[in-house]
Length: 553
Image 1 (tube, rainbow, N blue to C red):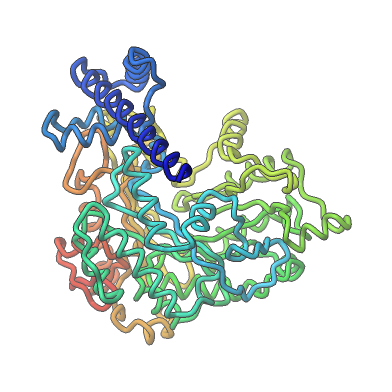
Image 2 (cartoon, rainbow, N blue to C red):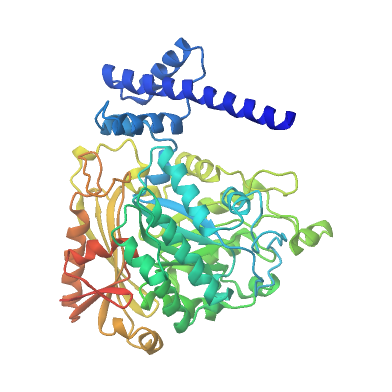
């Protein structure tokens, strides 16, 4: 009885504590609009002053956003683009034009025997329970619906638009999971997106959930799955398309045959080339995971591996994630280290190697990650610092070197650029890759330092009949593999002179790609469209044919 009474008292105390904070947040919003305080620094000063008048600490960004939306809902204020820009926490989350949402699958046995992978009983192979996304997944018992819902709410509460979502599915080797689980997992992810900020429309199956998402308030415009190169087959590519996947992350790690054998990766470079060829001819974007510093490798070897990665046309991925080898508990490599069989690189060696690697990256490639987000732990040995990208960027600047990768050049990551003073120009770059011809078409500034938008067009190889047999709907089609407009994510239907999105750049790139396809003798174009972007392509004359948007040229 006393315990129940104590809980009631605590509950009332929490409620009354929250009410004043919401009032304070509302007063800050009203004061900012009244005084037209829209600069970040000035808004922070105003926030501290108003909260100080109430003898309270400043409210969190999520609290301010809730107060802002409540005031709009009660019609006490009108929406303000200027204020919304200030009320964004960690704006980098949506600077690339999409809102990324990462989810983890539950643990399943992995076909790999890699010595560097940690094997924690409660987690999928290679993931640790104290990694941010993994911690959230474990707490939510790996529920796909709850993971998506929780992440969307966190982004929304911190001022990010969530109507264009890139869903990233992690959890080891996706292709080894039961097909029934795959379909259920992705369906529940779509259900969560469909339910967010709208009436919960229940779906009977994955196909219905995808159809609802095409016009939902929160649309999944891209879906990423990760797998091993030796698990990629034409049939697997077809299954991935049925799920709505548009990008595949491949655990490549290295192109050195001896190193692959040493770490017991279980496949060799022929599988990597084959998987890349299949996926590109199916229209997928291909993202390689690379791991410098593996046992048996050296800085010189790793630099040579990256040279081969882009000089050898069998590879040439669209994106790469560089995950330097880290010693972690519950891995066989950790035991090797304790026995003196392996020595991790010093940080200085790693930084110098990564500077050389970054200098090799072509203009059409995006380096989306430069370090795995392992929390600092006394259990790990010489784990790279989480801000390794910034450290390398500063070091390269001192040496007069630059990285040409897409992420370093995209407009959202160059805040000092005055968009209003730049008239983007069209550039077309051709290169051979995986038996086909690639066109990287982009809008950039005249000096080609800043990228506003780009498109990947593929003229597929004529020899890869396996993929046509699995996906006959793309036979005779040029392939539009990616269309991306950079800059701060803008909500659907909204425009801003200060943002590249919704300014017509995507439409111009699309027309250019169709023109090039016709010049190459193609009468049809197939787009590996994300489910949530189908309406966009429909408005440009494309029609859904099984899992692709296809247009007669």
